Image 1: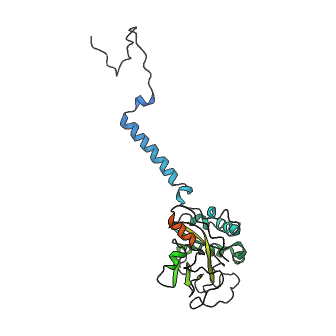
Image 2: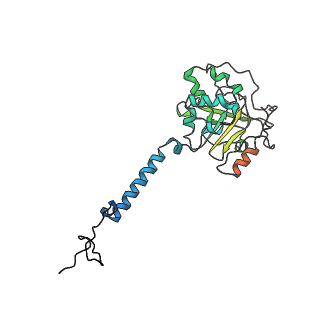
Image 3: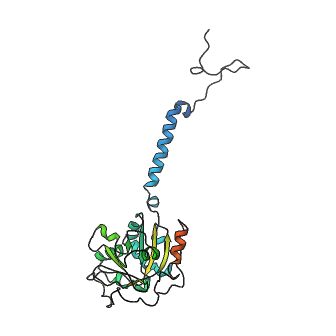
Length: 256
């Protein structure tokens, strides 16, 4: 009599000689290769779902980085309201020129259709800090901003360094009068948030005109300047460069 195959029969109890009903589970019904493929598919779906989430897309959150700094509360609200923050968070590298709340009045004077453009022009499309700016071979530069995605002409910020090292920014067609005050926060080579003394708005934007200023070339800066040889505003960048992934807080003594 042929011995029954274990594949098509129930096991025999060796003590009683009776048949023991076999219990089948879902894993018995799948070949090993099929189970492995199924696990791979599930893992792939999980990874795709995670990659599609806003949290995974954003390597940083500019609003969150300013959350514990009440002096930028209104500026942060404007970034969220116009969705500039959401778009900035999708960038691989950026620099946000943050305007303190005491200097945000010009934003509120802008027509609604120009407010977003003005805020987008405060997001540089690269990582900069005072050290990197000071290492530029020229004392002036044109830096593209997030606005350049929709407006190549206005989507830039002019950068200038005065004789004493004070750094300034200005909109196209306007003098460089917005002083670089200090580093607010930074994640090395990914995102930096630097405070500027005033909003950077192009002429004809609808906001009140800024007071006339001496062109940056040849002037000698002034009180509160960030000098490349001093610790004010640069120590944060050195700390950032030394600790990847960490957030560097601004020096509390930097003057506005």
